[in-house]
Each structure stands twice: as C-alpha cells, then as structure tokens.
Image (cartoon, rainbow over all chains, first blue to last red; front, side):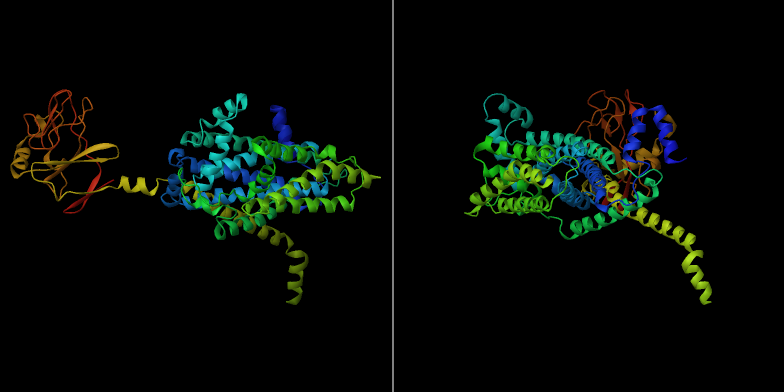
Length: 374
Length: 185
C-alpha cells in the first residue's frame, strides 16, 4: 500500500487522522530540503525522549525527599545514572534545538505569512519549555533550585489579591515539599502540553514548506526519512558527547549540594537556558518589573510577524540579517551577564542588553525592514 | 578481471550496494535504538535496595532451642524456630493423616537442617500475627503457636492442629547458605 492509499484509507474512516497523516508525512516534498528543516522534528523527538526518561524517573522520584531520591535514582536504580543524565542532558539539547530553530526562522524570516502560525507555536513552545525547565531544575532538590523556588514563591505568595491567590493555589504555600509535589505534577502535565505544541509546530511547518512543482515532488519515504535519519545521527552524536563527557553542562555547581533552608549558598544561579530571560527580569525593578520583562520579551518575539514591515514578499536585506546576528549576540551577552550577576558592572550591562533587545524588536525591526523593502 | 571490477563499481553492483546500505542503516538504527532504549526499560527493574531486601540474609546461629526469631521479609512476618530433640521426636511420631491439613515431618523442615522450621507467622484463618515465639509466650496445647484473634493452634512445625484455621502455616522460599545463615528469595 502506498502512502497515499494508506492516508485515504485512514482519512475515510477518521477524517482528522487523514489530515494529521497528510500534515506529518506530506506525501510530496521538494527534492532539495535543507538539513536544518528537520529541527522541528528533532525537537519533537527530543521532547518525546525527555517524556520517556521523565516517566521512568517519576517511578522513583519523591518530592518529600527530592535530593535524596535523585541520589537514589543515580545510585540504586538499574542504569538510573544514565536515565537521570538522559533527562538533564536532554533538557540542554532540547533548549539548544529550540533556540537554534527560533534563530534560524528569524534569520530566514520564515515567520512571515503564511509562516506566522508556525512561528507563534514555536514561541509558545519556548515559553512552555522555559516554565517546564525551571520546574525541572527546582525538582532536582539542589541548593540552587531550592533558593530559586524560595525567592519566586515568597514573592508570589505575598502578592495581594488574585495573583497571590493563584500563586498560593499553584504552589501550596511557600517553598515547602508540598510545593515540589505540585511542581512535579505541573512539570509532567505542561511537558505533555509542550509535546502537543511540538506536534502542532511540526504540522504547521509542513504547510509552510515549499510545495514542489507538479510531477517534481519526491515522497517522504525514503528520501526525507533518510535526511531525518542523517540529521538525527548528527544530533545523537552531539547529544552523546554532552551526555558522557559533560553531564552537568550548564547546571549551576551549587545545585550539587542538597537544599538547606537555613543556609543560603554563596552563588545562586540558574541553568544556562533560563539565563537570558532571567537577565531581562533582573534588569527591571521589582517583582512586577521582572514579570513584565519576561512576558514582554516573549510577546515582542511573538509579535515579530507584525513588526516586520517588509510584507510577505518583501526583499530580505543584509542590514536586517546583520541586526539579527547582533540580537543573537545580545541574548548570549544577557545570559553571560546574568550568570555573573555578582559583578559590580552587571546591573548596568543587564540594563543595556535588555534595552537593546527591546530596541531591536520595537524600533529597529519595523524601521529597517520597511526601509529595505523599498 | 579489471573489466569485471569496473562493471561492478559503475552499474552492475548498484542494486546490491543499495541493499547492503539499507541493511547496514537498518541494523545500525536498530542497535542504536536498542542501546538508548534499554536503560529506560532496565531502570524499571527492581532497584538495588529492593533487590537486596528481596534476597534478605538472616543469621540463625544465635537462635536458642525452643525459641523462634521473627524477621520481616516481603511484607510478611517470618518466624524461624529452632526445635529441641524432644519436639523433633514428637513431631515425627504424629501420623500425618490424623491432622486437619496432612503434612509429614520432612515436608515442613529443610532436609539438611532438620532442627529449623521457617514459616510465615500469620494465622491461616483470621490473618493475625501468631504468638509463641518465646518459651514464655502462650503456645496452646501443642507447644507451637497460638492465634490471639481466633484461637487456632499450631504445632512447632507450623501444622494446624485445632481452631478455625484449616491450613498449615505457609513456608517461604529460602535456602541455607551455611549452618549459620539463611537467605530468602
């Protein structure tokens, strides 16, 4: 049975299934696909892999003895050290893929219509994953995770009115083991939601992919499957190197200590994938400043299809391309400065980099794209 | 010779080469998926702590005659009792067919260490923990164990002799590692 026949067989019996098959395994693609087009697929695979390893760890994880249970997983569970490393390194790999995908879409300006829906899904995925990633970092029960939760929870729970009530409902009181039990639940549920968003991203990207000229297309199998396998092999190689040679990559060293409510560790920090956004939050004053910074940074990202004034068919100028590269450097600099936040110059630099981030989206993007489109 | 090699390299061998590459890719993928997936499956096997608990080793050398030691294994109270020569002789004298749940002496004790009885210390009628491990405890008319809940009585081999209970005490899976230690599981 050919792919077409299978699709119509399933589609007749369950129309939405036929549509899903068509979206995920489009029968006809252009012959010259780019290897980086496999990024959404790799994101979905990495997310599914994280879900699997997380499900295995959930069998042993105990939020009331979080740090001890992670140690138990690493020492007593068969291959537990490997499963735990899968999960920790999987998070690093997943965020690497998501950041790379977002950057690539910005660079190729594929977020313009009709790609804006796929772009929103990608930004939504990033927002969800940042939240899920932070919860996973807190669930490790290490000192850095504990104090991150402590600070966030105490600030949120003491808010007046509805926000405080929501925070109390979500956390079940400030930084108690009960909070970890809830966070474990939300970590799981939102990770599954992220898996659904990743599936949506995959389907939406298929629609945006260039359509082949009549009679020129090639089938997904075996051409694109081979491409996916090659991309997956390269990804697996990088993943293995990180897994076996840098299992604590991007994790604050303090998190290797058990959390102690009476001892504030000298350097509290976050994992690398949270650092740029934490830098934006730190640059703005107060709790609401931080919240507004994080929300604003994601909102301007999502608003990119409107901020780009060149229109769907406008020319792609070199200047805007260079500005996008500068933005990437700016985000890296935000992360690096946020990691070194004890430096006396850090507040000033964080302010500057945050200013540039919003300046890029809100001023430079509309101006330069409109100018270059003429 | 040279001509054959050239033919194979250019056109003739393409089909077999593609087949070979397909098999190679498929095999490598299968190995890779297996290697990645196996730790996830293996991690759900019993962990080292449960495994150690499931293969519990108990020291029996310190048990005095006519006394039983209680240990917990697999969530059950296990009684390990050392018999006196008199109790062995008495138990062997009983005709199994006269008992509520007939069982002969050799089916109740390990063949190599016939002075030890290892049983699950739960009454087989009303599930209560039995009394009679210490010589000073109430033991009933047969010198074994008695149930404080329904009054069922057992002999030193754990065979039911009277009371609502109808079955002998269960014997857990165990082996003598040496004269001083037994291992469960």
